[in-house]
Structure formats: C-alpha cells, structure tokens
Length: 271
Length: 156
Image (tube, rainbow over all chains, first blue to last red):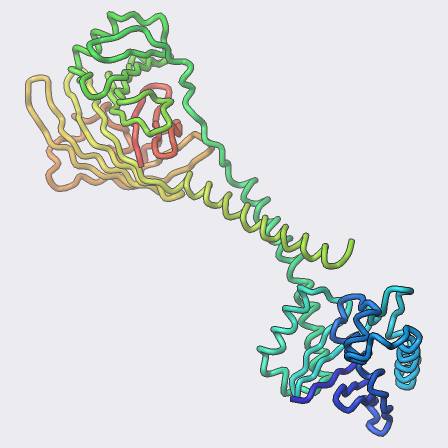
C-alpha cells in the first residue's frame, strides 16, 4: 500500500517517488534526490525524538554510509530545507538542527500519514499517549477514512479538543461528588468504650466485667442466679448499669468484646 | 510543566478520585445498608422473653423481625412472631427509628400488652419513635443500646 505524508496540512511527501508537492496546487512539485528524500523519511518516522547524525548514514546510504562525510549530510539537509521552503515561507524551519547531535522535525509541525485512503494525523507536539489514542481512533473509525484529508484533520483536532476538555471536566465532577459525599455523609463509626468495663471477679466459669466499679459481686451473683445464665459455653459476662435507669443489661460472650475475631454474644435485659 | 506530565498528572488524579469516591460510597453503603441478627433475653416482674431479633437497614427504611417465646412467672408460654417496618435516620452513631407498620405474624399468641416494656415500642405500635446508639464492635458485630438498656448485640 502506497504511503504519503502531509506536512503542515500543505506539503505532500511521497517517499516512494522522492517527491514533494503542494496540496492545493498539484502542478507545484519538487523532485528530491534519493538521499534527501530518505533524510526526510527518517525525520518523519522518528518525529518524536532527536535523530542523531550517526543514524542517518545507514538509513540514507546503507552500507556506504560509513564513508559519507558529515558535510554531505548537512548538504542534504540544506537541500531539504530549500525544497520545503518552495511550498511554505517558513518551510525551511520544519527541520531543526541540534548542533553536533542531529536533527529533528520542529515541534509545531503537523504530520498526516496517509496509507492508501486512510489518514493518520499527528502533531509533533502531541505526546506519545495521545499518539496512541489518535492512531487507534483513526484506524478504527472507518467513517473518517471516507473524508478528505483536510476534513479528517479538522475532525481529529475537534476530537482532541474534546478529549482535552473531558479530563479536567471529569476531575471537576468527581471532586464535586467527593465533596458532596463528605459533607452529606458522616462516615465515622463510634466504638464502644470498653475501658469503662473493669473486671470485678468470677461467677462459676464466667469472668465478670462491669461499667460500675462500685458494683459488688453480690449484685452480679443475684443477676446470674435469677436468670440462670449459662457460663459453660460463653464465659465473659459484661454487666451494664445505666445512669438514669435502674435496669441492668448483661452481655454474655464467648470472647472479650475487644477481640477482633467477632465474639458471639447474647444480650439480657432486666426491668 | 510539559504537556505529557500534565496529562499524566490529570489522569492519575482522575483515577485517584474514582478510587476515593468508590471507597467513600462503599463505606457509606456499608454503614447504611446492613442486616444483622442476635438473641436477646428480656425479663420484667411478670414475663421473660427469649427472642431472636433480626434487623435489616436499607438506608432510610428498615425492617425488624422478632421471633421467640414469652414465658410467664406462672409458667404460661406464648409465641411471639412480629414484624415491623420503620423509617430510619442515621446521624453518626445515633439511629432514630419511627415505626410505620407493625404486623403480627401467623402463630403469634402474645398480646401487645404482655410485650409492653419488653421489646422496643416501635415493634409494638405505629408512629412510635425511638433513639438508639449504634456501636460497631467489629466489622461484623454491632451493639444497639441507649441510655436505658442494651437492646441487642447482633452480627451480620
């Protein structure tokens, strides 16, 4: 499948033909030397990074690359800039030079990759994550492939804007929801203050705890015998007396109440 | 800050917010929607009630079921089968229950007057409101009490 690229929505590049042409004027074309064309192809393929000088030699000249001097590389890049300037006034700025290191496409350059009729648009400025989303989006979205390249680009830019808006909007919505939940809902769970219970002795096999330390064992014994509490299976007896009531409550448990392994208890109330 | 970092940071914040919201909602749901049951023995000068009490809370409404035996001092025995629906208002550990419907189930032989004072008033008659303190003992156990009595120790 033939591949071509559209740079800055105005310059078409055909790697197979080594040719540049204007999108809006098909008569305006520039035939590139093969090495110049290969340089541009490499820059486009690795458009998210700085392409080191040494990577150009094998890619552009193959096995002969080892013998090619650096001045030849610079000469080819100069020819490329000149060719690009034919189409756009700022065309010579499409290729950046990083002295003694290499070359890269300018971050503001948009690159639209067209495989047959299927368009894939990317901007250098868009990061790798966006690249994945947009590439996928275009490959999957058949409706886009039927649109002309410029319309596809507009559609994709609109979608990208939507994505940019969705993320902050989602954060705002979720933060609002969280604030609502935290203000409306009280999530605290009061726990019983077990420190108010102290052990006052034992009845049969039961260890007796009470929240009134002044309670005597006689009272506990009376409660126990009057209600035939069975201390053989559950051995922890909690007696609760209330400040405003003469009633008393008992909790008979198989473990202490502060045992994390869910003690099983039976409640007794006496009026 | 580079755009990529900005997007990554926003994505992380979004995911964190989703997780925190889910956690808060789950905590709230656990607190307001639960079922628990327990055994209780209540005695006064005339009767002793041995009953199994089942409570089911679904946010603002709840149901209670009492099943047990009422034994008189003279040895007489009655079956207790009652259910009640109530409105629930929860505020931290305070639970306010207002009975909306009290029903005697088939097999119930204990008269309402016999049970007065032995079980919560909102399990006996409509439009009765009570206030209870709900304590979480463990993740599975709750204790219902107020300033007069310890009503029920129940487990999920």
